[in-house]
Amino acid sequence: MRSRLKKAFTLVELLVVIAIIGILVALLLPAVQAARNAAIQMQCKNNLKQIGLACHNHESSYGYWPTGGVHPWPVLADYMTGGSPNPAPRQGLGWAFQILPYLEEGAVHGLTTGTTMERTAVPMYQCPSRKARRVNGKASTNVLMDYAGAMPLGYSFESGYTVRYTSSQVGSSFFQGAHTPAPPNRQWRGVIVRTNWELDKSLPEGGREIGSTPVTKFKDIVDGTSKTMVIGEKRVKIKFEDGDYGDDRGWTDGWDYDTMRNTGGRYGIDTNTDSIKEEVYLAFGSAHKAGMNAVMADGSVRLIQYEIDPAIFEFLADRADESAIDLGAL
Image 1 (cartoon, rainbow, N blue to C red):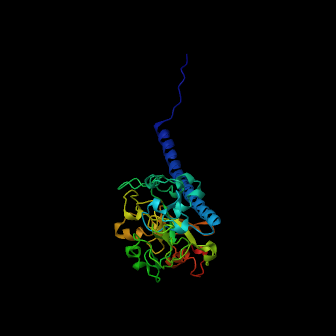
Image 2: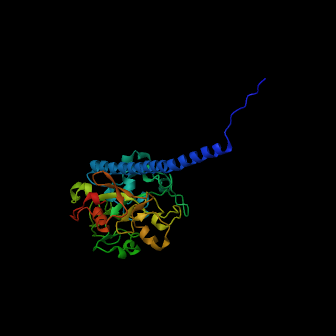
Image 3: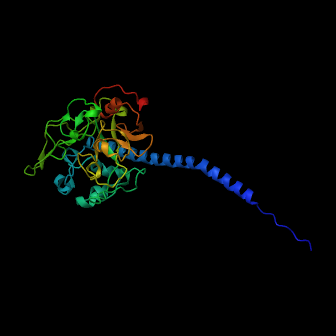
């Protein structure tokens, strides 16, 4: 009988096939990663789109935009009447709390225990470029958030509108006084303003107006809704769970770094550089390589590149500086 020889790959042929597969994988990986990054950024944009829509629905219901709250770490019970949360003009918790009913988070908005609320995640408030659920692991389990309302450079947390400062003058001093009751008779020129309210439980309504900028209406956005930034992504330290004061309370905060940021901070991608820590905590930015996403007052979402002119960036946050902005420069 004639035996048959079985054909097989030689070692050289096998190595060639492995090399070809390796080259193909190397060529495909960047494309796969790019597609993944694009999908993540699209999800982040969708978060902001829904947040912007919720702000619009809030305005449709009440006739004004949500506010930024009174001060950091407000106590929920202080801003409730008859078991229900106060509306924006008398609410100590900020915009992220006020728009919950319009994000289909009515159950969270209805929580009456502050601790429970602080530990409850709202998916729309977390960018997928970071972790699905960022928490303050140092001091508590507060669920952190990745978005903040925009305040122009020339307006401090303490004093309201003062002068236009250079970026080198921006630092923690701009936020001194934020942990005290809202100062009276101040002007705020972002779309989201500091709540014009002073807590006083001896009064029938539980407090009084303090003569500062009232709630924002569409007519107050003089520069145009498409050219005014309302909410954008925050710049944070890459070590997300360090519990530092600029990112420790989360979405339940009031007028604080957690939910409000200044356009004069050192805008850029997330960092661990401690030398600029103070500016990172008041700055906008993101985990995206190209820039941050922001929702404008008309509800549109735009990618703002890190190379943007700082002056234009400030003008975007001011609703009434009457500056001409070329949206193509973003």
